[in-house]
Image 1 (cartoon, rainbow, N blue to C red):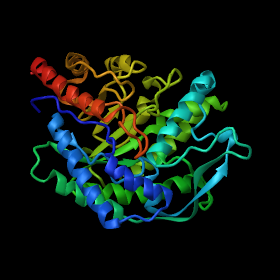
Image 2: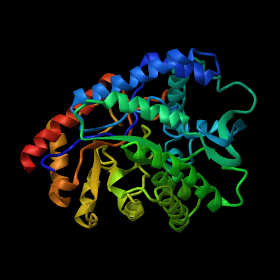
Image 3: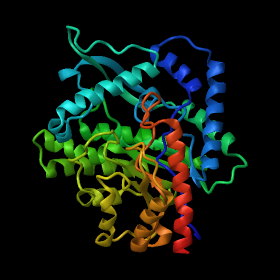
Length: 400
């Protein structure tokens, strides 16, 4: 390496023409499948071009073909049944001390986010004040999990066509981790361990197909770290959390079996949502779990103000030989576009600790965790990624 490379966490904002089809699919309405296929492939070509134009080195398809970074798996796996179920207070998200500490904020936050999502789907949000039970969609495992790779092969084909002839260092595809397969309730497997490893076997098929296609595979694991707060908020202990997490780390490595570490990126964040995050676990409490995953690249939040200070952890924790950190250098958490000089500063100070060859510039998380959930305006997304690339050039001039 003779420079700092740049990338991002995976999910990017879908264009309006693609959302029109995604909305029809979500509403269960008929749509022109041929027209959808053309719009999807065109959207992938456009998002690849935009990443190259922004100056990024390691790119993906922005997850254009997925409903969300989690639920896409449920669309592609048999043995899973969606149901509308009654929940306490209509709660969709996992419990957390953050929500307990800032209840008024989260009432507004959740309502606004739901309104935006329903509007993007072409639907009207149900009246929360209406009488009757509040329902949310959950997914239940009712039979053996069997993966259908047809949608994955479509996405691989679209991405290969879009990157052909492009001057990029690498191409990756994001996929969900066993720990992050959320809203999924087991009604089929004998116990938790059997269920988690059955899920890992399904994901192994997906991971291997991506690497066999010549791409890097990125395992997205937002829940592994966030569950720390969920367990504690329900009265559990750190030991309870670690038992839960260690099983999922073992399952992740089971899903990655036979795949070379140098073809694997592992992304963790603290749930990604726009909120206080005052009860996020310190990185020092979970970094040993993260580094147990058999990957070469570790993508970790560092740009938002709750976690920026944690670059100093690497002064005390030895980064294993051959590993590469992809810290968040620009964040999806704010609409402020980072100055390239700040980007460079963040890169240089970490590189001075772990080595310039062990750092790549990235983002805290995706700019759109689902087709109908975006974190910033599209113009800001691209401005932030361009600032990332410009800052990496400045950092390179200082480090080389």
